[in-house]
Length: 203
Image (cartoon, rainbow, N blue to C red; front, side, top):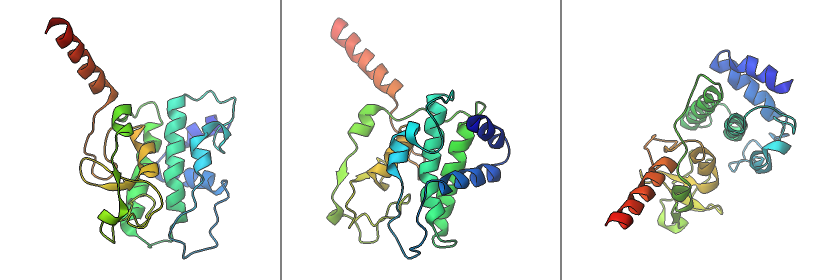
């Protein structure tokens, strides 16, 4: 019943979709008491284990891809929900756009790009914090990357992210979430491997 109700709401405007998303985020028990907090307390367990999260139950008949889209929208929406109004206009707009796109793609008539290849994600470089500018931060979680305890990575386009913030997006899109520069897809890797096999057989 929850999924059917959600589908009806998602078929309306983006604004309604965002309101529904934030209502779901409210169910996750996010602590808003510390208004000066800069490192956001996001429920990673709910994202990594969709079946145990607040959005879906074991008996859900929603496709795994749609579940992943909505779970990822929920993941980014938690960062957005914890921000104070006007705290960082650029980040607010960025997260609003990501959430809106993911919710649109969760509907059958909106198809997003393919995910990045597993090879690309596994080979994301690890960037040492002391090599970064003191003001460098992750646009998603807003952690200062120079002093962050999380793993920092860099996309080929040059944008830096907390790796744990970037991977959920790459598992659904082969683009940088910031500039939308494209990276390799699984299909591209398969074509490369087939070409290598042909070269070995006939070379």
